[in-house]
Structures are given as structure tokens and as C-alpha cells.
Length: 357
Image 1 (cartoon, rainbow, N blue to C red):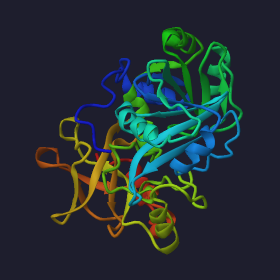
Image 2: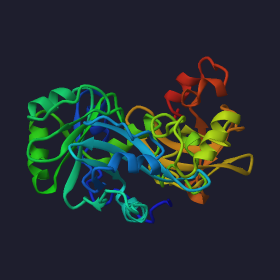
Image 3: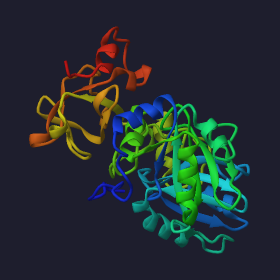
């Protein structure tokens, strides 16, 4: 999966007038985001769970009805090709992913049907995704007449079609409201009237970055393995086998650590000089990583996700970007697993304040 040549969110509003205020609403109350450009693949058929179990990294053969999870498709070397949300409801499993991934992913699924009783299809024209984010999400859903899933990743069907899935990211509480596309505007109005501030993808992406949640194709490259970006557990089940790339997953989990790790970078840069996804991360003249998603955060200032070599010290002096986009950068120690770094009193607080002083 490669980085899109254009903005992958260009089809929907980036903001609704004040992206920083929209972030604050997500962090403190609730906001609703149009993510209707997201692709959806429907997999009906009586063998849908057992069939998907053989193809995905997650254990789904016994996935209970009205629940969800995350999953990946890997290549034979264990590198990430596709990332998706999974929702099982009624007689169908729904896989939602970035629209750019749908053609290749659907083609792979269709090639793997053989004699299985499944009928995967592109349902992107049928269903649209709206996301409600913030601690008041349950109250907003209730006021809008929608069911509230009891716990994270639970799925509840919506009368008239679609479903609500409780999500653990990008904020303290969130839910994807997946509804028939023809009624999307109606649900948008109901959620807005129920107290969710209208917001754009800039706010959603900023909270995703803060939560260290990678996005395939932006925060990954063609060498990324699941261990590097925190997808073990959430999207990869370590004790199941029988899927492509499983040998690499097991070997890295059992014998060592991955060569890179996903970190949060604080950038000392203005809006005109921010790096972009794919730019290098440099230490002492040598490339030690790659920049992923870059955002302006309402509290942290300019920050970015980055994949860097595991050997890069947490307190290393770095630059991120290419040519005129190059900016001083520092790793946020709080984004590094405790086993990879010793405590550094005071530095986390300094980094949380950004490098803008």
C-alpha cells in the first residue's frame, strides 16, 4: 500500500470553519465528522467468518454476532498490505477501509473465494460512515435516536439499515455510524442537533495522531510489519495461524523486536514549513526514518507520526522533512514503550509543550 498521490480526504470537508475548536469539541464534548469517502466491503454468505479467518490476521472464525475488531491483510513476507475495521452484524461482515484500498483488497478477496459460500462486494455506494468523537458520544447517540453499543467494538444494528460500532479511537470515546448513503444527510442533521459539533477530517486526524493510531499508506510504507506500528493485539492475533505472512509475525514476536517503531514527533516549524508524509527523518546527516501523518494539534502544536529505527535514542536531535520543508524535530518520550527507554524526568512535560518557545 503506497501513499496516495493526492489528499486521501479531499472528497470530504477538511474543517467546518475552525479546526482547532473542532478538536477541542472532540476532546471535551462531542463532534461529528463526515467520513463518507471511506470504502466499505460487504461479505455475506454462510461461511463468511470461517473464510475470512483464513485470510485476515485477526481471529474471526468465532466472532460473536454484533461485535467488531480490526484486521490486516499481509503479503507473504508479513508486510502490511491492507488495514480494515471489521463489523459482524446480521448475516454480513462489513470491512471498512480507506477507499483507495478497496479495489485491490476486493480483488484479492474475490480471488480467494474458490468454493466458499461467500459473496464479497463493494458496498461503498450503499453505505456511508459518519464518526462521532468525544466523551459525550453516548449522550449524542441517544439523543439522535441511535442505539449505544455497550463497550468498545460492539456493533448494534440501526433500524432502516446500517449499524453503530463503538470505537476505541481516535479519542476518549468514539463511534462509527454507518448508515444508508441516501439517508446520510438526515443522520448528519440528527447528530448535529443532538449536540455533536460539525467537524472536519483535520480534527479527526489530529486526535488520531495524538492517540498513536497509524493510517495505512500514510504512516506505513511497503516494508512495514504489524509490530512496528502497534497493530499486534488490536489487529493481529498472535496465537492463530493459517494466514499469509503469519511466519514473520510469529518470528518477530518470539525472537526479537522489529527494526523500527512508531513515535510521535514534535516539530519546530510554522505552517509553511511542515514536512509531509514520506519525507525523511534525519539524524546527523543520515536518514533514520520516515515522516507519516502531520497535523496541527490544538494543545501540542505541530506534531507528526513517524517510523524511526529502533536504535534512535529518544533524546536524539532530529530533523524531519525535505529541503524547504525540513524542520527540527524531537521524539515525545511518552510515545515510546517503557521497555524501550528509561524514564526521563521533566522531558515529557517539555515535549508536551512543543518546541515553539
